[in-house]
Image (cartoon, rainbow, N blue to C red):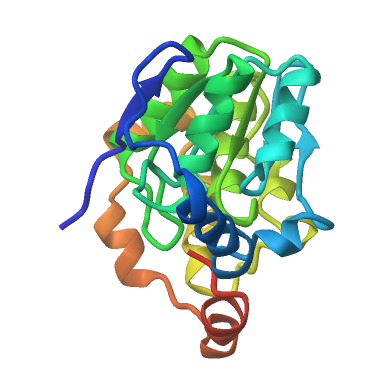
Length: 234
């Protein structure tokens, strides 16, 4: 069953959702973050880039990268993976609170057609954020790409066409894989708009059918092999 966007906000002074790691548990959790969640690769390859003077996008930040983000002046981090009793989230929550950053958990899915409710919630999120902000998923390729396009469309007034680079191989996004349904979402709008000019938000609210989009989308098996088996994307 499909789930709508889930939003939760953790302020620096709020009690943590999960207890802090201590002792050997902390060392094991760091090993999990580095080697199971592939954080070791993000020590030398991070997709962090600046969308505007107030917004950045990236892959999952490591603790020292969260501290570095705070030094850049970032005030809010948006976690598109959602809260989890796992090392990536528990360290992120801890280091956000240490650095005095607000952590917003906004759940987005990389292999599902976005729900209209999710798109509308994203629009509201971008209106309410305490900027400057950074948003991230695991690899910074798919969910971060979707939300970057929506940010530029809703917050910066850019056209849907002009935001296409945010979902591209420049960030490691493979549109031929199952994650390509995110591209297909925007392509469906552009095709409809070419025949019947319609504002993007009106299309999302009144015309867009996620089930139809899912039914007609086709991923390539070889691309799925790359993203799911080799890169192990979420």
